[in-house]
Structure formats: C-alpha cells, structure tokens
Image (spheres, rainbow, N blue to C red):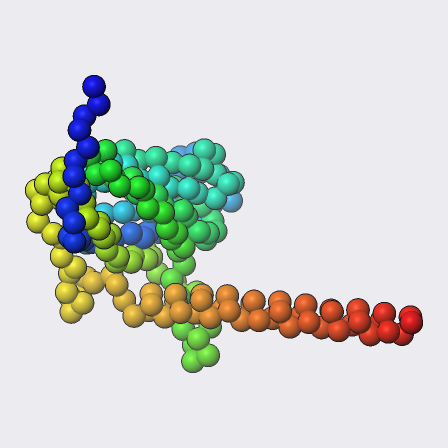
Length: 216
C-alpha cells in the first residue's frame, strides 16, 4: 500500500540560500593526468551553502550538463560536496539541475552558470580585458523558495538552521561588484548583438525589395 501523501502547509514559504559558481586555475609545471593537450585550466563547479554548509539534508543530487565536447557531458553528483572538477581551455554555459529529497515532493530546479576561466578588469568603455591571476573565482548567491511545503519536508527543512550570507564587509567575500558588472556587460553585449542582427536583417529585406522593384 502506498504511503499517505503528506499535507501541504498553506500560506507558508521557506527559503534556503545557496551559493553556486566555479573556481579555475591555469596549469602550472605539472599537468593533471589524462588532460587533453589543448586544455589549459583546472576548474571546479559547485553548489553549496553560503558558508560551505552541508545542504544534503534537503538536496538529493545535483546534475551538471557540460559542453557536448566532454565525454559523458551529463555528470551526476549524489553526495556532498556537490561539486565537479574538470580540465578545459574555453568558457561555456553549464546547466545545473538541483533535485530535492524524495520527501519534499518538489520538482527539480534548473539554471545556468557561465564557466569562468579568466579574470577580467574593465576599461572605461566597459570592455573586459584578461588579467593574469593565480586563481579565478566566480560565485553567485541565490535563494530557493519552497512555497507551501508538505509537512514531512517542512520538518526536514526545520531540522537545520537557515544558512546566512556572509557579510559583504569581510575581506573574503566573493560576491563582488566586479562580478555584477561582468554580468551586466554580458547582458548588454547580448542586447547589442541582437540589435545588430535586426539591423542586418532589415537591410537585407530592403535590398531584396529594391531588387524586386527593379526587376518589375
């Protein structure tokens, strides 16, 4: 006989903060074993609590979808730490899916992280310039909201205190204004690219219309 379905708690929401992102470091004198010859960096992508807390009490597994050029690009991590280490040479978008414990009755959530291998500084015209550093860190803070969780999952969530975001005043804080500016630059760059494509399409259509008129 199937287990009874746990009732949902109406008008209640519970949040749990997470940090996701990646670190990266250029190869030194010693290359990782089995790293392809064209690879230049060692990187790690992760999902964790803001202060590296264990989130496995409500997270069952995390699935990372890498670039299709990687062998077995869909990687599943079923135990903490929810992180994956690989080598590479280029930056790309990584799809991250978080699956919650079975008691939750919640659907998985999916989002993207831009794998960052190179540090940047910005010029006055907001164009990024690669800058040499020993290690790169690209981390972002977010909050998962569980609306009207069921009673069983609510007990699980309440079994651990809510995680707190470290103060922005600490010297080790990784949520920098530079990362925010880089995200703004990527969005603006995407907007400008789309605008350029639209103008190019308009010009092509105008040219075609003129050619048709001259033929007639």
